[in-house]
Length: 138
Ligand SMILES: [Zn+2]
Image 1: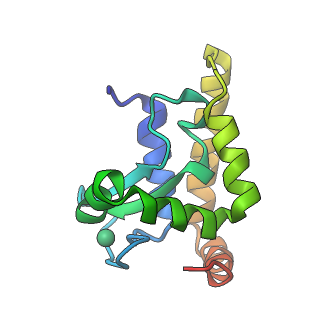
Image 2 (image 1 turned 45 degrees about the horizontal axis):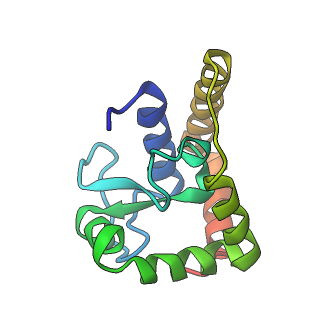
C-alpha cells in the first residue's frame, strides 16, 4: 500500500513517541534508521484507525514480522495490556467503522502531526514524555 504524506509524518511521530525503541524487544534505533517501523495493529486499509496513535507502536523489523503475522495473539495481548480491555474494544469498534478522509481533514491531520513531532522534539517535553512512559505497563 502506497505511503502518503500522512503515513510518513505519522510513522515519524509514533517512532519518536516510543523513543525510537522497539516496544517488543527493547532494541534502540537511530532516528533515521529504517530498521524500526511504525506497526499498525489493525492494518492501514482500515482508514478510520490508520493514523490513530492507539493503533500503532514502534517495532523493529524482526518483531514486526513476529507480531504482524506469526504471533498475532501476543500482539493482541500487548494491546490489551496497553489500552485496557475497554480501550481495546473501543479501538476494535473504531477500526470497523468506515471513514472517508476529506482533503481538509487530512490537512488538519498533517498540521496536528507536525505539531506533535515538534512538541516531542523539544527537550523539556521530552522529559514529560519519558515520565508518561514510566506509567506504562511495558
Ligand atoms: Zn524488536
